[in-house]
Amino acid sequence: MRIAVVGAGTVIFRDEGVGVYAQRYLAENYDFDGDVTLVDGGVLGFQLMTYYTDYDKVIILDTITMKNDAPGSIYNIPGEELLGLGSYKQTAHEVEIVEMLEIAALNGNLSDVNIIGIVPEDILSVKAGLSDTLKRAFPAFVGTALDELERSGVTAKPKPKPLNLDEVIEFYANPTAPRGGIEN
Image (tube, rainbow, N blue to C red; front, side, top):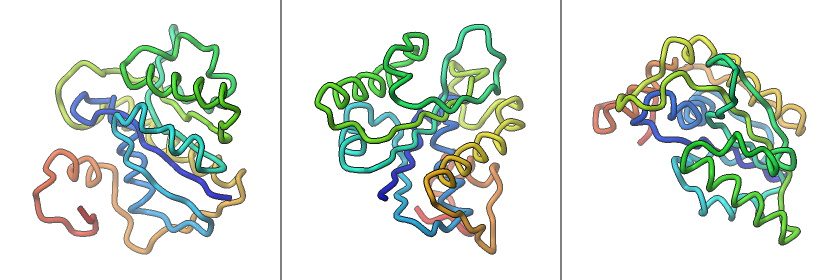
């Protein structure tokens, strides 16, 4: 089974970058025993169509806007459930993700897709990093992605020299700075 794990979001808008950070965190801290491609999806939007149609399974890591839920709440939503969930479509890239799901579904080409989303606290501040609320919830967010990979038959093996979340955030905050374990 070919699996793509796509981190979506914008790292310059605080919590909006959590999906990108999570994807990089997984890449830096785990080896996978299956055919897993980790993708810094940023705000790819319509370019995600390739992943929706060429992979057997796609896991999208992103913020998710759910009314009346506390920041840090985590969801694992199958793609077919997301097709009718209008409350998810709050930011430009959220709209594009759902629209691409709808187009792929109409073509009968849709992979098995899961959105692992976390409710953000701050997506308006122009600042790299995460709010304290999302930093506290980050291990559970990454754990939800690892659980979904395990349900798909993939085992994650921790790398010997793990990087912490702050080191991953620093990679995006200062992309030209010298690095210990992170490759540009």
